[in-house]
Image 1 (cartoon, rainbow, N blue to C red):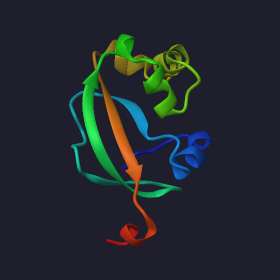
Image 2 (image 1 turned 60 degrees about the horizontal axis):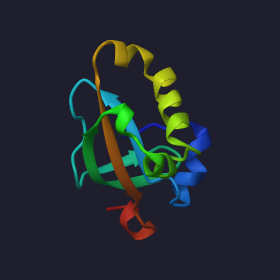
Image 3 (image 1 turned 90 degrees about the horizontal axis):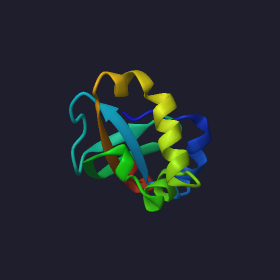
Image 4 (image 1 turned 45 degrees about the vertical axis):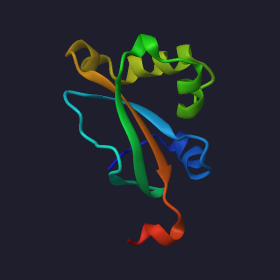
Amino acid sequence: MLLFKKKFLDAIRRGEKTQTIRLWKHRLMRDGQRSYIPGVGYIRIALVQQVELDQLDEEDARRDGFASADALRNELQQLYREKLAAGHQAYRVTFRVLPADEQRK
């Protein structure tokens, strides 16, 4: 399951937010995996890649629902302050919301 702040749910439903950056001690999801977002429904994970926060670019920001790469990095720094200090790795998780006919499978 992937949890998101309420402010992102509409953009996910519309297919505008198709990526999230997560900090994990080790990789927790895999390419092709089916997962669930409360308030949205089932998703398919397209790709999970390790990434360095300083390598995030404007395209990452757009796919993640942010106006700029700096805004994305700032949010991640605030949200994951403790995990960053503990040495957790950043992962780029790209996904798509499954159509209604695949939600029940």
